[in-house]
Length: 289
Image 1: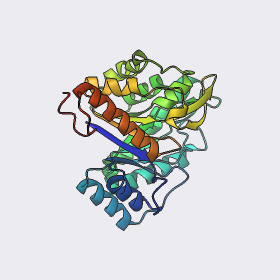
Image 2 (image 1 turned 90 degrees about the horizontal axis):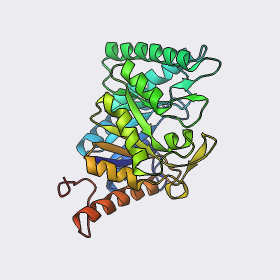
Image 3 (image 1 turned 90 degrees about the vertical axis):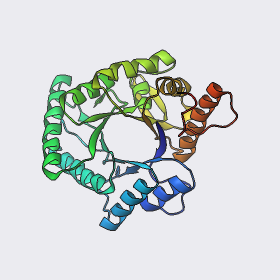
Image 4 (image 1 turned 135 degrees about the vertical axis):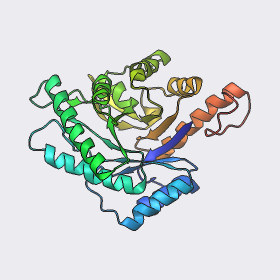
């Protein structure tokens, strides 16, 4: 199954609440996923709004994810307690909304070695998972691959974290992987290597962030519209269709829903190429399986 959506309230949506954005995603864009953004800080959400998000997404088959505040450092000293609180606050809201994951940026190396940073992040994630169990939070923690060398979050590091902390899942930001490895994702084989590395995790569902990215010397500067970046998405889509992976594509492009729809068009174009038909629906893969 393929799901497609955008990270945040669509730019073309007149209403600026998450409720407005969710309804717009379904009724106007005809997409079936949305990532709710708490990235700039802790978002106050009334119980009524959270219940609406849960009910509407369930009734209309829109998959929800939540992105916790950007600045989180589970490897630091003074920042850890506040970082944990940010994650728990976001997770409690995520659970109320019925979101599948609460997505986090794990942390920074700072003065620590890569090994020490890894140990600290694993230790703190295990503590958070214990709180999840006590509070019966069903939403999973998603740890995102990162696009800067000074930030913890290479694909290998994220996989190791997921191997060591039960219930934590990887968020595969291909734009970040591309930037961190100085433009590594160009051909089908490059994307295949990602799935090969992920295989030991035995994932049943892949959450994939897509954006163009400006980078230099293995460091991301900022996101670009997909067409303005130098990372092709056709090879990735072909792999997903060929392998029948269960995938959620989230557009993190500055154009948000425009590029979410662009991803949809590219998926449907690839389906039409396989079927020889002039129409396709990304939600219906029956003719190519």
